[in-house]
Length: 113
Length: 112
Image (cartoon, rainbow over all chains, first blue to last red):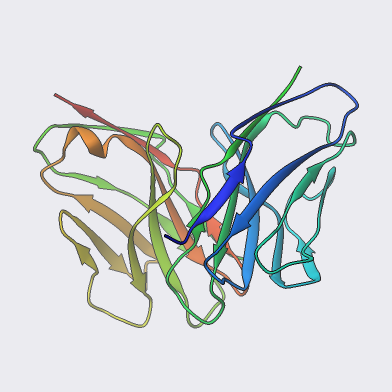
């Protein structure tokens, strides 16, 4: 079955380290998204990509970076510049030109230790 | 800019009863869609229902239905015959030009 795979499910980061969250989809979707979820704040957009080798900043891009070298992959790097990275991160994708809604991955819980 | 407001942080409903979750939105798009997503304790986001803004008829999916008031920019979700498995966070969302905008969510508790 097609879907989105996020890994790892849980991730621990030491202060000053960069970490990369993986997101892979086999739905042949054009667009991919990264959201951050904090209690009481809903889903906030970090980065999104409509096409390979192109991506745009969302509302809270500072301290994060992404790449889109392949259509099926959209990894998110949380850099040491992100002041408060502890959160739940969701990856999503959708087919441009349709209105079927996002398909979401199962998320990654990142904790700074 | 698009905004989505869910004014009820938490709601409770008795099993088998009906509950309505509220959502208001603002958008400058002339053609847009509205969505309700469910996030159970597993945290997997699940699409519950969607509404095309140009359609006046309210969408229905089994026990889930919406009350879409376009002029008032209101998009509420009604859950009939509530079940224990309906307990979750519910997020309202609207489609923007390239991305969806989400509300802050309503936590629904179902009482046995």
